[in-house]
Length: 247
Image (cartoon, rainbow, N blue to C red; front, top):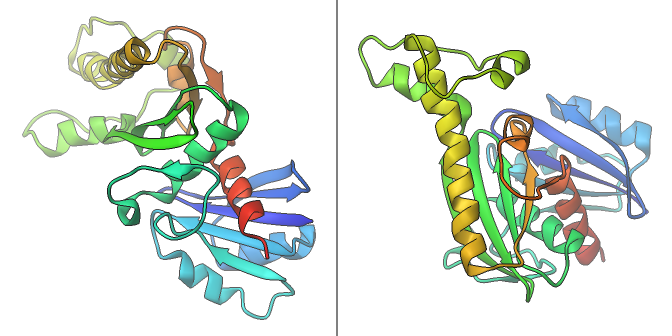
């Protein structure tokens, strides 16, 4: 079976095309027209759409007329998933958070896993060894932290994220306004995530940590202990959900 999953996020719509269980291709699309082109080129027959931005139903409706056997919209509160969801309000749970948890539980079965998704927001989500999704935390992402300092003050400048080379050399102690803001926003985020990991490891000594998301590269060298970096974790989780729901 050739299948395609689409993760419609706040900054991009990322797709993964799977040939059986293998991820054959991954990329991003900016419109339904581009998605149609990917579907025709890959000859996918089953599609799963998930979104934390615009309603995924809009994308699903726009695929009418394509030669597809099944088009599913992932809804965390109702769509069956291959783990137990203990979130108190599953209907409000972001599709990306649950898909990441599914992907982590699939890759590291039988042990507690903390998923760190470093994107628009920094999300930490826990799956316990019995394959139960417990929930987690949501905090501002790197760009959001810098933007907030500018938006909520009168004189702090609006800063873009530094280049990768600049980020590697970022000092803990900033010596001007710009570097002080970068240190507080970026180094502060890394220290925060390390604190979250330490707190979870105190409760779950066998904890594995999986890092994903667009800003994963910034955190990779700054997080303590062994970290598994899986850039396509959410796509992998969405594919596991699609396989479970194919009928």
